[in-house]
Length: 502
Image (cartoon, rainbow, N blue to C red; front, side, top):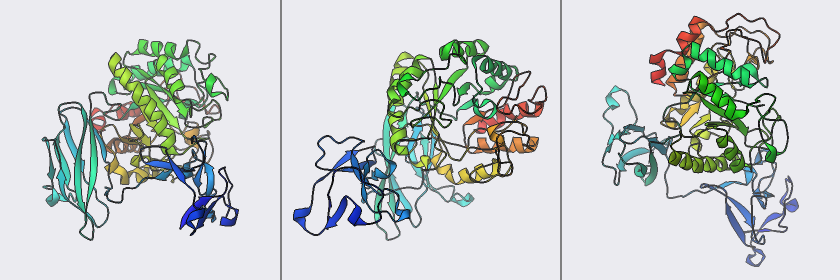
């Protein structure tokens, strides 16, 4: 059979091949040429051969409307997520665990080899790496996985080893594992930060951020490792024009660079993170996203002294792999420059809420952490759409084999210190609205959240009010204790033994 096209332009959602621009025939003379447009290292778009200069705006193979809706193959924009066709090597094997790993030079190294059902690891070819070996000596204590152990090479660079896997029929396949050894990793350990969203929502400003930093300094949070203040949505001047993205001067009269200078006046360890979106607008539809403007926006952020990006996926314009891969490429180039200049690495946090399994591709897209859950709420149980502590844990506990140095599953902001008085975090399974007063977490539940987040090597993000005189910002209709932060909160958040596990 041959597949041909009758019109080299975008079609529509159709359920019959008679209405589609893509058709099949057994007549070779009717066949037409197709061409492949590389979208990422793993995906291509299939575009009519008559298009002389294919781009991501060209029509491509796409089940417009979705197979679930009985739609047939037609043509639609190559940048659409359903136009990305994965490249599969039938001779290559796979593992149910990370195959892109990171290490600092000469550091202890461990890689548990989790295989697909019915398969077994029979050997590992380490090539030029003499410091690693295949182990299975812990089977007697219940470890059902063979693992690679030793120390990483002492010289920086990209290395690889090949895992030899036998499938259920006894056929041997090879799985390549890449190992990046560098002293300049984005996030050798999980990021520890404070984010604006659950307490302030849109109501952020220079003065408020500095007051939060002073409270964190007073309570020992910065010395404990919480060293990044992240401006979430609504830090920018409202506009829909991506080329005009800049900070809101009414909120940040000294600019973002002025904010960083003021924060480092509180403690020189402090860094600044910022928020954007892989789409046309951010989730609040407040400011423009960065898709298509990755280089311009990252250059802007870097010029302000920003050290980290949280990148959302609302109003998206392309698939996750394409959207995040484009930004990852820009940040990778930036980090080459920052390393040469003697600056710290720029960190990239992927925030698409775990919907397209970013643990499978997030590192390859250039991220060092990715959300594994929907937005976490101040609730003990919750559900998959409004996860509390236990629901978020349940979503992430099966993903341990994809976490490691410089690649972390992000369980979202912790709700410790909110005491049922936050804003968006109060939209729980039972409350179902932003703001208002809810029960919140007990001290024991808060300790459990901190412990579980650390056990799963999640980034640790706070979002509570550390000011001496707290004020309800995203939840203005409630009376607040003064101060809001308790001794139990501080003891939980600065527990050095728990943080060491993280």
